Length: 278
View (cartoon, one colour):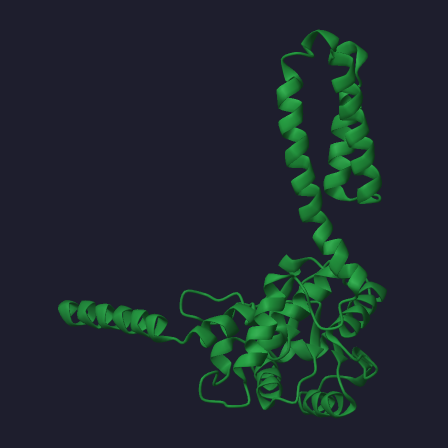
């Protein structure tokens, strides 16, 4: 009996390995976009007592099915706040499902004016802030292909990524068999994920995202210049405000104020130090 159990265990492991190897590149991309935290068995891990459920509407039936399953697994969730953003039809369908699950109307906040992921995220975060829940665990439900962009937008507007828990895994949809999940759509969203972008993200937001890389490149150059000067300026440290330089560098990394202004200040300070050593 022990040998049979062991053999069965090996067979299961082999089946899991085969499934992983044979998955299409498209499936792997959608799995990454779904952004779910899963246990060893592939099940989605969600907080037991979330403060709210945030739903980005979708015409896909899988989203409504997942919503119903969430309340079936834990009926106590009917006492949680629900924040919905989407088209009028999407919000109406979601509210109908919530009514079936006996969620009280005064716990539901809806928005049908959002025209993009960015606008929807802004609404959701603002509502969570108004409720005093923006620092607590929330369950995030939307179609897997757009989940990652939704999370990035929610984090941009103030939520902690570790507190946002995606509910619908890629395994919950027929990625390869459903022709409506077009390759071009998946590829586009995957590229957005890589660039930390999302639908509706304003140009200035995109520029701000690139400032961190710009600052990092500049600081690497600063570090090289400072290392070259380190030995030569040992006897002059009392006359140079080293702490001020370090403080400026830290401010550039944090982007507490205009990056270009701080870069100029930092470069000026280095230039002054170099002049002193000539």
